[in-house]
Structures are given as structure tokens and as C-alpha cells.
Length: 264
Image (cartoon, rainbow, N blue to C red; front, side, top):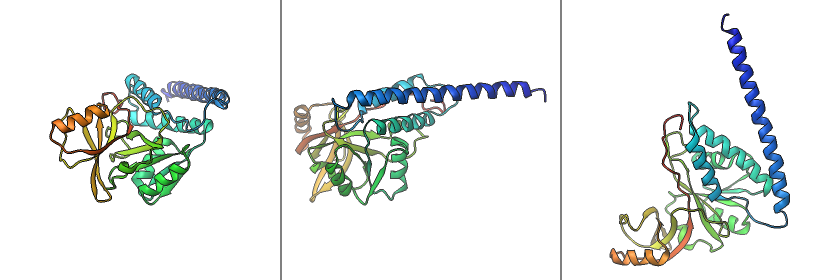
């Protein structure tokens, strides 16, 4: 019984923290409402800003410490952001292969429960639906085997590669891509190119093969590189790799290096 006063004090402290968190969330909602009004006549389209989101996630990871797993913090933060983004400009997520648990888990983890999910049997269905509503986003697997990026609608672009943090607490180890309106400001990070080529690996100075696939019987690669299009074409030629149909199809932000211990 001697520890009861101390337990009561600690529980009171938790109640105070919870109350402050709730007050801050309500204050954030007021600010978001003001932003929505300010943007009403100035902007249209998706409120998704992958570059700004990446900066915020890096800042969270940099200052995180203690016993709370970083994955938990990321999930809470994404739930908050997803909800408030819906308040600014409603959008849906078109999920390719939406019947797969991994796809739905990642969609919920990354975009929150406030964002409507629209299931599609395959990548083509998700991209077609997105092209009809550019305010939405699409979540696509890299493991489909289809080289969908080769003929990606020019109105669309790859804007994120997830999970952002590749550490053991991630919801799914399977990499996925987010596609959105090509007018969204691309994040600072590796550029993504579609290129028709056959090779097992790329020299480090060229970049990374993110995915392989076929489109109309043609072998195509999705390549991440820091080079611009002309420089990339030149490096392919110098490496003796025959490359065709090279075009920019997006970019993604990378997470900074961090300690993946349980607390971050």
C-alpha cells in the first residue's frame, strides 16, 4: 500500500499529458480549418505533399528517444496527418490487389483510417481509376511482375516509395509505391526512370534497379538514380547496356540513417 501515493501521482501525470495532447490536436484542427479557407481560392488538387512529409518524418526520427518504438510514433503521426489531410481536401486511395492483407495493412498504416480505400484487382484498375480522379492516390505493389511504369499516364507520377523507415517494426517488409497527380511537387531524392533494358545489376554510379517487369512482351526496368535523363542515358551507353524508351516517371524521398533500436 506504500506505493499508492506514487502510483496516483504518476496516473495524474498521465491524465495531464493526455489532456494536453487532446488540446493540441484540437488546436491543430483549428489551424487546419484556417489553412483550408486560405487555400480555397488559391489551390486545387491533392493536399498530399510527399517532400514536406518526409522532412517531418526525418525530424521525428532525429529527436526520438526512449522506450516507445519509432514505428508506433510514425503510425500515430500518420493517422493524425491522414485525418487532417482529409479535412483540407478529401481523397481516396486506390489499392491494387486490395484483397491482399499486406496491401491493406500498408494503406491503413500509411494513410490512416480516415482515408477511404478503394480496392482493385490489379495495378491497371487502380491506375485507371486514379487517372479519372487526380485528387486521389494509388498504392501499388512492386511484386506484380507487370512493367506498368513503362506506359504510365503522363498525368501521373510516382511520388513515394514505402515503407519510409525500413526497420523491423515496419507493418510490411514488402516495398510499395504511391502514385499521384504529376503536378504534385516531387520530393527531393532519387529520380525514378522507366527504361527498356535487360541486365542483372547496374553499376553503382548509374543507380538501383527498383523493379523489373514486362509490358507488351518488352522487358522493362524501374531505375532509381540521382542522374538527370541525359546523364543517365550516357552512363548506360558507357556501361555497354542497351537502353531504350528512357523517361522520368517520378521520384521518392529517402529516410535519413537512424538507429533502429526499439526506441528509435
